[in-house]
Length: 259
Image (cartoon, rainbow, N blue to C red; front, side):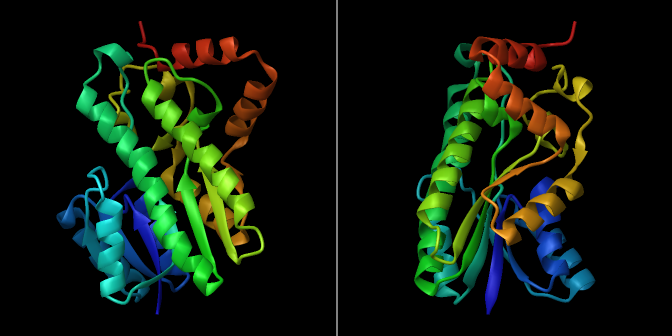
C-alpha cells in the first residue's frame, strides 16, 4: 500500500498538503516534532477523508533523524511513493547577533535533513520506477537575505538541489519539484520573529491551502519548478535582470524592522 509522507505536517502548508493528498484518496504519513499536534491532524484526516493517517513524531533537526525515520517506515512496511519535504523554519536577526544553535539547527533541518530524506526515499522510488518529491523552497531563494542570511541561503540550496536532481532523474519515473511561495499565512512569521519586519506588511500573505493546492498540482504533473503567484514570479525574474547588489538591498529593506 502506497503512502504520501509529509514532514512539518502538524500545521501550515504541511497540514494543508496532508489534507490534499487525503482528499485524493492517498494514505498519509504525518511527520513533525509534536506527537500531540500530529494526533489532532490524524483524527481530522481519518474522519474527513476515510484514509489511513500514520503518525511518526520525529525531530528532523537532529543528526541522523532522516535515517531513523526511513528505518521506521521500512520496518512498518510503509511504501512511500510521494515525499513532501516541508519541515523548516527561519530566524530574523543579524547573523553575528543570532543564537548559534538556532542557526545550526536551521541549516540541519532546512538543508541536511531534506537532502538525506530525498536520498533515502527517492532511491526507493527509483528502484520501483515511480515517485514524486516536493521540496519547499521559497521566494527567498532568489537573492541573498540580510537579517535572514541562513534561511535565504538554505532556500537557495533547496532550489538548486531540486533543479539538479530533477534533471538527473529524468526518464526514471521519479520527479522532483521545488515549490517557491512568498509570504504565507502560517506560524512562520512568529517562529522567525518577523512580526516587526516589513515583510508581512509589504506583501499580502497567501493562504496555506492555496499554496498547498498549487504545489500539489505541480508535483503531480512532475514540474521541476513551481513559483506560486505573480509577485513571486516577478521577483525571480527581477532577480535575474537586476544587479545582485540591488536584490540584496531590497531584501534588507523587506527584512528590516519597521520604524
